[in-house]
Each structure stands twice: as C-alpha cells, then as structure tokens.
Amino acid sequence: YIGITGPPGAGKSTLVNRLIAQGRALGKKVGVIAIDPSSPFSGGALLGDRIRMQDHASDEGVFIRSLGSRGAHGGVSRATRDVVRLMAAFGMDWVLIETVGVGQTELDIMEIAHTTVVVLTPESGDTIQTMKAGLLEVADVFVVNKADRDGADKILHELKAMLEMSHQEGWEVPVLKTQAFQNVGVKELAEILESHRQYLKGSAKLQEKLLALREAELEEVLQETYRQWLKGELSQRA
Image 1 (cartoon, rainbow, N blue to C red):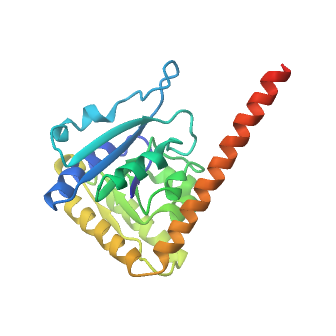
Image 2: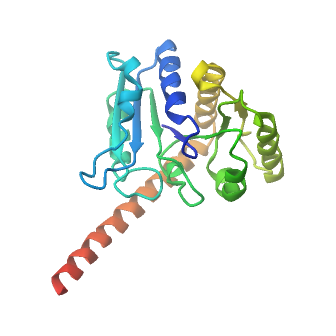
C-alpha cells in the first residue's frame, strides 16, 4: 500500500495519475483511493478525484474510488483501511492512497501505508519547518514536485540536510524532483517504490510494520466504539 501525502496544492492528484500510467506500463493492476474533503451536507466526497483521473476510467486493470474524509483529522477516512484491504483481496498490485493534505498532527497515513511518499513543492519551506518532526517519521520517500519552479534545489538540499541530521538506520530515504504535469521523474519514483517494497520484503521491517498497522487499527476501532457508546449515553441523558 502506497500513501501519497503532503500539503494541499502539491500536485498529489496529478502525480497519482502519472503513477497509475507507470504502474500499468509495468503490468501492474492499480487501485486508487482518493480521500476528498466531505460535503458538509451529504457527507460524500466533495472534489471527486475520479473526474481528474478519467484517462484510466476504461482500463480494467485500474479501479479508482473516492472517499469522503468524513471529518477524520488525519487526512484519511475511517473506511480507508477496509477499502485498502478489499482492493488487495481483488489482486491489486499497487494500492495508491491519496490524502486530503496533511498538517503537523495529520500523519495517520503512516498507520495504513507500507510506503509513504511525502509530496512537497518549492514553496513548501514554511511547511517543512512546521512539520519537521512528523515529516521525518512518516516519509519513506520525499518528492519535490513542480521542480521547474524557483527554489526547488533549495528545498531539496534542506530535506537532504534534515535526513542527514536524523541519523536514521536501515532504509535511506531518497529525495527526488518531479514535474508530474510534464511526466518528468515519475518513472524514477516508480522504481524507488519498487525498491522500498523489496527492502521491506528482505528485512524484518515488514513484519514490524504490519504489527504496528494492526495495533493502530485496533486502537482506532476501540476509540470509535467508545465514541459511539458515549454519544448514545449523552443523548439518552439529554
């Protein structure tokens, strides 16, 4: 499962669209879960990423599903785990999960995805400062998208400096530049995603990650159960 996250306006949808094409070129079946802000009236997905990915609508090897965030604060919907599991059961080789857009505490994608891609832009300097600790924890891959803009090299060096100072063991987090709109750098990103997949398979990290994902899911289920119980108790006493 591949999480694509980052601040709003970073070009995540365009990047996902290009990754679908790259995955299909590699012969992979691709599932996409696009988490959209919910409509305050219907509770449904507001933006409808499927409209932005119509290039692949007729491809039987691609299935795209929009989910409303339903007020979830972590950039992902509570139903995301179930849909991810369903897509995997139906034989999807890649399951791409695009989040609404993260902030300092909105990093729940790391509790669902095996590989997390954090997408930033040359204008994301302030974002890096406010998200520094969380970013280092969540990212398996950093992407500086819209790299044709001024400041791309600067943010690239800042990210690399942050990673060098963090002294993380194991997987060396790569930082690469892309121009998703022009399909530049997407092939290299797909290769890195496959490399991370092989890295997880060849180490104890995959089992550790799967255990952490199950623990996070249990915690979420317990929290939701308690929230519903408390809501019912309060409504009875009102």
